[in-house]
Image 1: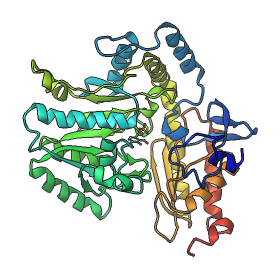
Image 2 (image 1 turned 60 degrees about the vertical axis):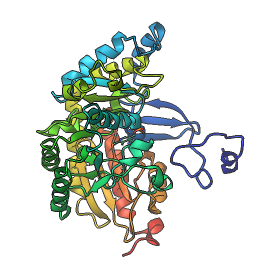
Image 3 (image 1 turned 30 degrees about the vertical axis):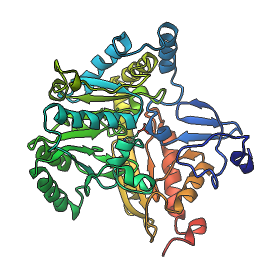
Image 4 (image 1 turned 45 degrees about the vertical axis):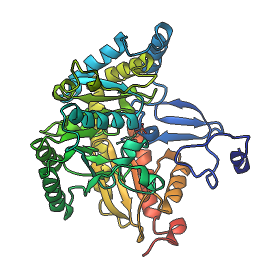
Length: 438
Ligand SMILES: Cc1ncc(COP(=O)(O)O)c(C=O)c1O
């Protein structure tokens, strides 16, 4: 496909996060199998970012595909108000076994952003139903957070190029720095001061790893302390586990590294193993019970046409069965070890400013000598460098990370690491040289 065709009416598709004017034509994928994507032109790529972090068991996994087919042949969908079905019930019963103990109720929606919208609305209406909405009207979030692209989710995300065009339509949020290095004491002090006003309704966070913000990682004990401060002041803690859920951090959920559990959790991405869009917002009995009333105005008036789609539930159950197999869990731990070893190896590399690892996610932050960030001009160079070596890695500005499906073999993971290392070795040479300060 030529570039001109992408701009013309012969290609009427507007792609996400893509400047359609300058972007190269999209690559057509005709098949996926395990970690491998096959292009129409006959090339292959290892999907080392799990297709925007959704694909946990590999592409076209036969067991998930079979379960989807079986479900689609018996009940494809039914309105979820006034009706229920086994796939939704089975899925929630299963997830209760791996979620933190305090999570007891499940609300279905369609994607990570809507899971966050639901979580925020639950928190706001919790105080409304208790007659405290006037006073509890503040939300705390982290700088550089990313919680999705709908308006509530954008509001609680860090302000950035993503949100600039919409800034006047977003509600105000109190931002804290991640508790890291010299920011740690500022973070705790600001948090203490904010919650002491008794005006804060909710604290929302990506537990342990900020994804789109640059794979920024912080310690469980610091998050634990923040949750304790919030909960002792009746602030609802919302863990956005859209990216970190389902094994990404080495445990089923990042919240399982914590002593203090969130009140609300948002799950999506890995939930259906990357087969179908679906999400869940889970909550404690305390939150749920605040909506139980003879007064109809205390109802949670939220729902989507495809709520709890049975086919998506069947995919999620199949994915759960694969994920919770003990042998599979061992393999995830091996991937965690391999990622940690690679991080250690790269830590002192001259081209690398910072290395980070948490479970199956490893990230290298490259030296640039200039302002970093998502729109950093090295991004396209890095992306193409990796594709040319048969590896799909999609840097966040100058942060290159690997977050593979758990079916990745040792050989494939080595190929991904080799590509990342080669990039680091060439960083100050050739194509990258003109923009890198020595
Ligand atoms: C932590 C987090 N929350 C929410 C979202 C939004 O999810 P979705 O793209 O499915 O709307 C994302 C997406 O990357 C995410 O990483």
